[in-house]
Image 1 (spheres, rainbow, N blue to C red):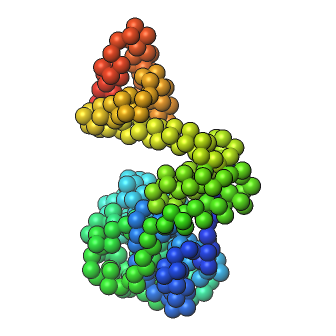
Image 2 (cartoon, helix red, strand yellow):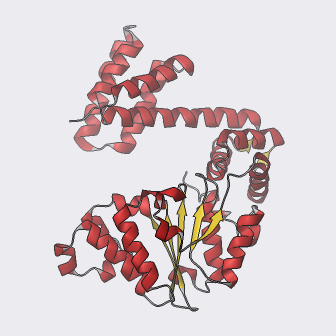
Image 3 (cartoon, rainbow, N blue to C red):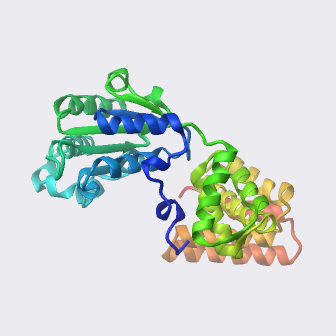
Length: 335
């Protein structure tokens, strides 16, 4: 999508959060600052709720609200952590040379918490997707929370609160953000498409909400994709658009499995596409090339195009579709 994401342009304010208990708990924390453990399933709206909370409590949220996605930070290399503009100002050259990646991340946590707020009496640090945080980092976080509790509020968002050590859970007030009901999802979609001026009908919104299966972010993005592709959100428009999106996702998963050497998984997905979903081999090949163009470049991309060309020639000769597409997937394996 080239247009601004609806998940961002229509982000809710705290008063607009449609889950009464979650909203009440966050509003209580506005009056009485405390560390928070915000937990619930994927796509329930945890991050959006915390961002709304931060806008409510901070006069200058750009300065006093820091958002760290644990999954992203922990997947960074040592060099990427050192050069990240959020952290580079307090990582000097000596520390960059002599510290391990783990030490750098611990240092980032401590330094982020130690800085005085720009406005008000405290700042907020969101640690998102915290279920991916190793126990040694959690122990370091516990110490930082103890040391800087007067100036820094931590909000820990996770799908799996049991993955956090008890000392962290005991220092946070729990806020449950459950999966939205079907009716709540439809209500959110109706407000957004009305604000965007998109033609729609009830059946289209109902279909998009059902497609998302309780994932509010997926529902909003699916509605936007349908509107951009078809110019409207009706049952037929949503069906055509979202089935194509789902197939693209399956092809990407198939390519990832092949890259990692999980050929049984890759072939299973291929069978789903060819047999269960009824896609033609040429359609799968086109989608595979589209995925390759988003993942590869240079010689690697040229090689995939060459292999795809050979596969296409074999398919013209009416050879077995599964065999030749499986052979192409095998060529994408670990090297």
